[in-house]
Length: 183
Image 1 (tube, rainbow, N blue to C red):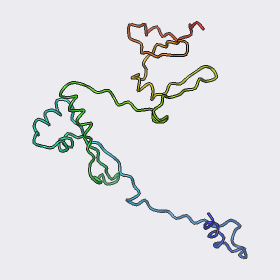
Image 2: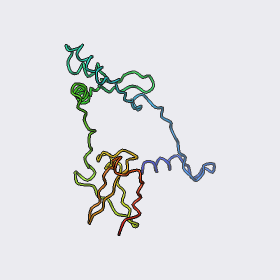
Image 3: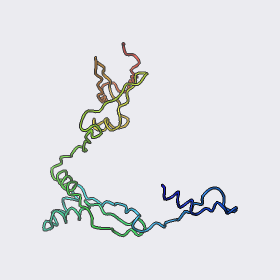
Image 4: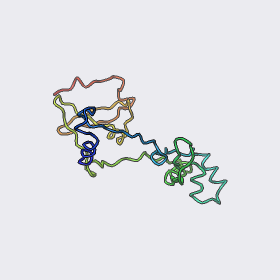
């Protein structure tokens, strides 16, 4: 900061009447070079199901890495202006093996659940508002398996509130707003 102040004082001459009281600022435009541009990532076109199994059976002599690349389980950084590949592609072997398992056995995997890392593995804490509201965040509803638009049944006990998804036969069409609670 002191250097900027010294430079500003050096550029103004207090005896010169044409110089305004404010120091001059010189802005230099630095053109965006190739080093400062961030490459964008693209994914390969992934094969799944029967198409994946047929490709692997037809190319059994290839290594697992070559099979993963050949079936599109990789990401590649690309220069945003020229669309030329930058660096080596990154193989997504876990995704490839998961797709192989799903295709061959029919077992589907649930989406990965994120840990509550913001509180170092401890359960999240919410605060009850002045009018009694409590917001359950999207992160928690996703981990619980709720989709947007899912109707839930609210059960309140002493010290505990439970949300359970409504089944079609549970009278979900009644649109019970919860206004009839006995408090």
